[in-house]
Amino acid sequence: MKTIAEVMRPEPQFESELIQVHDETYFVTDGTTIIFRSKNTCVCIGCYHGKNEKEERETTIKFANQIIEKIEKIE
Image (cartoon, rainbow, N blue to C red):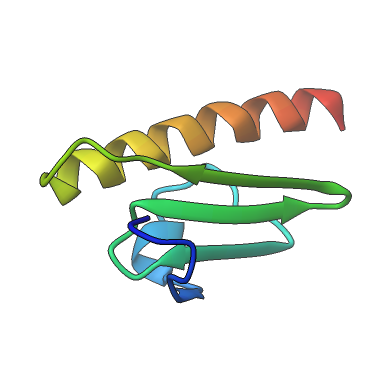
């Protein structure tokens, strides 16, 4: 996420990399930021490594999947 005014939207290409798609899932168009909601839990993850969007996207998805696993254990 480069600014807080980024457009967030569903992105099936990035959703397919998540271990579970929750009630609402939105990405910045380049996949470097994700917001998702599962029942009453909301999570926003953004990653910035500089100019390598592929690494940023991979890191964002990795952290999202780790958080999803923890949420699943709680709920």
